[in-house]
Image (cartoon, rainbow, N blue to C red; front, side, top):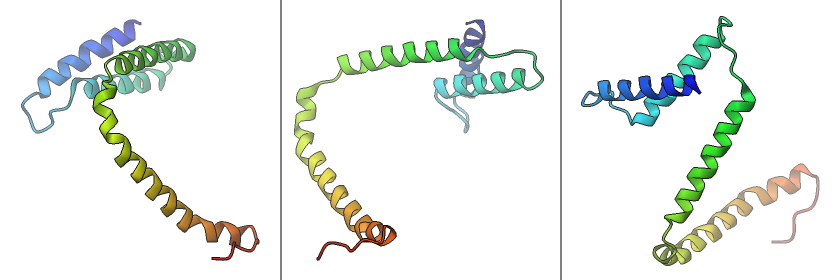
Amino acid sequence: MALIAVCLGVGSALALWLAGTAFELPAFVCVLFVGVSLRNGLSLPGWYEVFEDEVSLVGNVSLGLFLAIALMSLRLGELASLALPLFAILVVQAIATDSQTHKPAFQLLSLQPATE
């Protein structure tokens, strides 16, 4: 947990330092960059071993919290108007996928394609 706190602190400071420059990034990207750098930098010489079970647990809890918050703030009434366009896109993608894979799949399996 201390390493996560260090990543948050250093990553936030890095985001503030980059603010207003050509390399400005969102704060979470800076935190992720610091985390990846620390993990790889400390584990390469063997100074620190990352406990995969704990990292997995924190990741699963964080993902669950994020999904719960995101789904609670979802306004289904506003999304209802998008149902028909999304369904149309799905149908077009299914037809395109079938038209591109139907014949090669049958040829690969040495089967006769259905009469077209």
